Image (tube, rainbow, N blue to C red; front, side):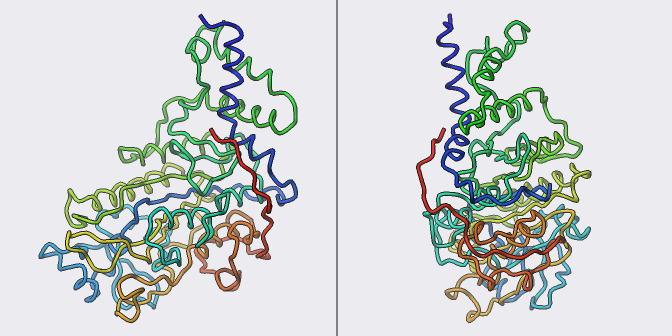
Length: 451
């Protein structure tokens, strides 16, 4: 039997746990750091391919003789891609044909329709080959610096402070580093799982006498306007907004597994009109040091390329009414070596590809400057060289689609040489604005309550 005292303590503990991140950041935030409210209702979905996706297999210079020699002829069991889907890159810097992996046929359709753009030879311009360091640098938005106490998406959100019941979603069990320190980030795998913890009798009982008893009681505690009470109130509002949701029925066919499930969760939140502006999704398993199997149906790369391609196409086509305001970015921490290793896999490399999908994307083109695969053009004589900083791609989306010109705050240390309105790639449509390269970050960092 639960006592009244235990019940009330459970209410407070549950809300404090779920709202902990919000409380910590609201109390310690710099009230002068935020800019004007968001002027756009565009939605950005960041898809991170964890493990180091082999960009030279996903978007491959398939008939380049150096590539074929280094990867091995596919007719003899090598890793050079066989049956690549040829692209018209509309980019004169390529000295050979370029094509998508044959399992990426859904992406080829989006590319041909003008919805998908590809950036090659891009990424993190840092010498690290550590998964953890590279992901840290990219997701904090500070290459070479892992001491930043917030992620780049967090700092963007703090510039524009979007309204809405659920502006930020990590479709996973936990938020990624790119959302580190974001008070309004909600991490969940399924909308129906986001609720208070406690006895079923008080949290999920259909009897009208007890239905939502704990939530109703907790709501009476959070009626004021100070940061702590506001954080609890926002959490309760989010729980109520999601409490009536049912199993999602998509209009397209998603791939089975966590990736497809995560994309469906994001699509459902977009359709519910809860104010979603930023979402993150992960697809892991790309660290193929042995038996990469790019040409084998059982191969891990082959299967992941199919999952990625099918998932992105299903997600985009599931949201026809939202495509004009939707931008999806796909990236990984680094690429793989040009040459295969002795285990018929590829080791940690450097340059990679980024994919940009959306209704305002100038697709059907491969962007960036191709450095070539000659030995003198490679990074450390082994890796595809980076000619486009990943921040250049993201900055154009932040400015032109998300309406935020405070790039110095979003990406501390960024310079006009990396991004300026005069040297943008032109991947997305939108309005240019004056760029502020100075940082409005709060110089005092205090510990944050974590749940």
